[in-house]
Structure formats: structure tokens, C-alpha cells
Amino acid sequence: MALECVAVLGWGDSGSSASGLVFNGVRNSNRTPRKCVCRGGFSGLSGHSVIKSADNQNTGKSSNVNDVPGKLCKDLISLPKPLTVADFTVTPNDGTKVRISFKGLPGSFSEDAALKAYPKCETVPCDEFEDAFKAVELWLADKAVLPIENSSSGSIHRNYDLLLRHRLHIVGEVQLAANFCLLALPGIKADQLKRVLSHPQALASSDIVLTQLGVARENVDDTASAAQYVASNGLRDAGAVASARAAEIYGLNILADRIQDEPDNITRFLVLARDPIIPRTDKLFKTSIVFTLDEGPGVLFKALAVFALREINLTKIESRPQRKRPLRVVDDSNNGTAKDTMQPVHLNRVNFSNVGHN
Ligand SMILES: O=C(O)C(=O)C[C@]1(C(=O)O)C=C[C@@H](O)C=C1
Image (cartoon, rainbow, N blue to C red; front, side, top):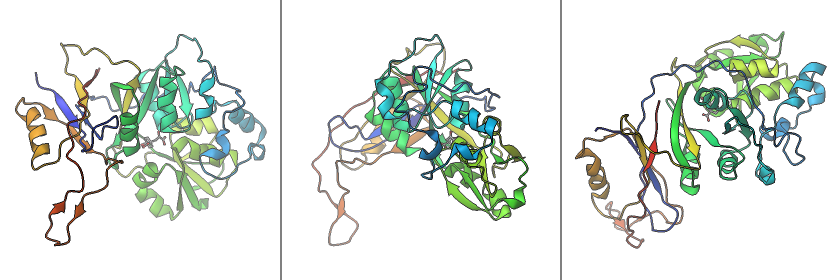
């Protein structure tokens, strides 16, 4: 049986920190995001005293919900706050819903991806990617849904590295076509905007429209944080690039829809769980492998030959640096040969994690 594969490779020493991953591919033709209602919130944590306020952590700027008109202010306060590492001492709730951790605020595309994978889930907003991993490891969430690759900006390396450091298994993936909208406070027109806030990927993908508007761009942690920041600060000169759902949640108007340069701006998200799934034999499965290689000519070629000789299609190769190893030093003769300052390294670990697909 042919398998699609994604390979993520790295080299390094033996020990617990593997330096690379190999993923086999899963095909998912359904690229249209479901229209979802925000179900954000993790009841076991709401109101917990150590939860960081969503108002100022994602932008690094202070914000004041008191600046916002009554109803909106009340709505913002009632929204679930993202998890921080400090929250992980809280007992998880015992609800029957699947709890899915994601990075960002309610209304982010990551939450859309979680709801696309599990339409009835309870989403668990987290401050950082690592918090989303920890939420699953500490049983505060059942699964995490995290972006790994975008069709225009490429790999999300932070999550590759976190996959290597954490013990979660890849149990699925979801592909989401993000529809970027330009949002602003009600009554504000596009030509009044002087700056636009969003996740860097969303800003880069909306380059044509933002250039036409001649606005300054400001990076924030996720698209929903941008919408929340504009709304909670009552900013009349600032817009946000975010989803239509974020507009609804934070009380903003949609000035322009589908402002992405490429009509198909696809982000691939991984679904991570504490336990692996048992691959079925009647369907194609995507498999991810992590391994390191010995130093030497052709080692990568030989490793990849293992797949080629079995007609296994690699869909992605990713190489990550080995933090504990210095870079190889080119010798003084400057003839392009490398002085190997490292001890030979040995194949460290080969991981197969099977990814089911729908
Ligand atoms: O900012 C968000 O809404 C996210 O979910 C994050 C993210 C990303 O990490 O790339 C996900 C998909 C969108 O294309 C843009 C941003």
C-alpha cells in the first residue's frame, strides 16, 4: 500500500532531544471552514484568579475595557481568558464534551480549526503554543489543535520544536482556508484607518489590500487578539485583520471580506493527543517519523531511499537545528570542506506516529 509521507529531518547527538521529524501526509479535500459559533471557555478555569487578562498580554500594550461602551465591555469580560502555565494546577472539568486546547483568543482561526475537527467541542484558549501542549499533558484538555504549516508562509517551526520536546501523539490533521476580513469599530470607514493589527501571517497574506490602504502594520499574537484590542480600546484609527467570527464576538464591523492575496490561503493544523491511535488497515494513513542521522556523505540520501524503494511518497521534509550541537566550522583553507568538530552521532530515535484521516 502506498503511503503519503512528510519527512522532517534533522541531525544530532543521541539523547532525549531528537532533532527531526518525518511526517507522512494525509489528504483532506475539504478546505472550506465550517461557519462556527464560538464555544470558547473552559469552565474549570473561568474566574480563576491567576488567569492573565486577555486585554494586554497579546499586544504588549495596556488596554482598558472601561473605555468600551457598556454592553461590549460586559461581553468582553465574560469571554473565556486564555490559559497560562500558572493555571495548570486547576482540576479539569468532568464534562462530556471533548476539550480542545488551541493558541489564541476565541474567534481566532485556530479555534475555527478546532471546531472544524470537533464541531461540538469545548475550546480551551491558551496564551502560548506550549500552554496548549501542557493543557493536554495535564488533562486540562483532551486534545490540542495547533498550526504546523501555511500554504504561503511555510512551516511553523515553533510547533515542530515543541512536538520534539513534548510527548503528545499526532492523531489527525485539519486544513483550514482562512478568510481574512478587515475589521473596524462600527461607523469607521477604511480611509480613516492609519494602522492595522493582526497576526504576522495574516498581515503578510493581505499585503495588496493593506498597501492600497497605506496603513502601518502592527503584529499581535493572533488575529482575534487584534480584533479584541481594537474593540476593547475603542480605537478609531486602527483596524484588524481577523475572521468574520471575530467581528461578531468583539462587536466590530467587516469593512472588507476576503482580503487575502491568494484566494486559497490554507493552514494545516495537527490534532495532538496523549495517546496514539491505532491505524486502520482499510484506509491510507499518514505517518510521522522523527530521526537523527550519523554524520557522513549520503546519509540523508540513504535514509530517504528506504521510502523511495517502497514507493512511499514523502509529502514534507523538515530539518530542525540541534541546539546542543554547534554548527560545523568551515576550515581555514576556505575550500568549502567542513572541519568536523563533532563526535560521530548515531541514529537516535525513529518514531512512527500514525495519523488517522477522515
Ligand atoms: O491568528 C490566528 O487566528 C491563528 O489562528 C494563527 C494563525 C497562524 O498561526 O498562522 C492560523 C491561521 C491563520 O492563517 C493565521 C494565523
